[in-house]
Length: 150
Image (tube, helix red, strand yellow):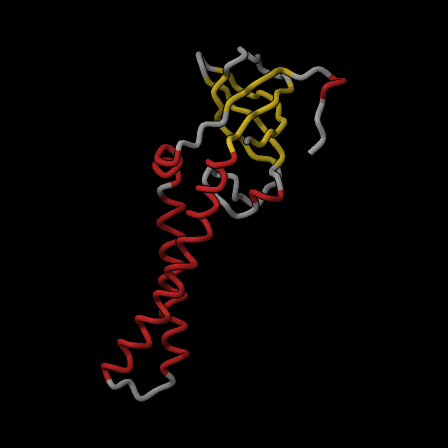
C-alpha cells in the first residue's frame, strides 16, 4: 500500500531530485520528512527512478508503512512521554512530600518533558527517516492530462 503525491522537480542530481510539493493535510505535524514547516509548499528529496528533469511534474510514491511509522514517532512517542511524565511526576512529588498542588506541578513537568521529546525528534529527523526507511521515490513524469488532484 502506498501514497502518491505530485510535485515539480526543482533540482536534480545523479540519482536523486529535490521536488517542490504542496503539503498534504495528513502530514501536518508528522515531521519525518521535514514537512512540518508553516508553509504549505515544501521541498523533499526523492530517489529519481525515472530520470525526471528540472521543471517536470512528477508523481512521488511514499509507502504507507513508512508514513505510519513516522506518524507514530511524531505523535505516539510524545504522547507516551506525556503520560509517563504525569504518572512519574505525581509519584515523585508525593514521595518527596510536595505541599503544593501536585497535579498542576505534574502536568507542567509532563508538558516540559513532552516538549523536550518533540525537540529531540525534530533535531534527529534525518536519522529517524533513515531508521524507519523513509524513501520517497519519483515513479513517473506526468503530462498535463495525467495530473492527479489530491
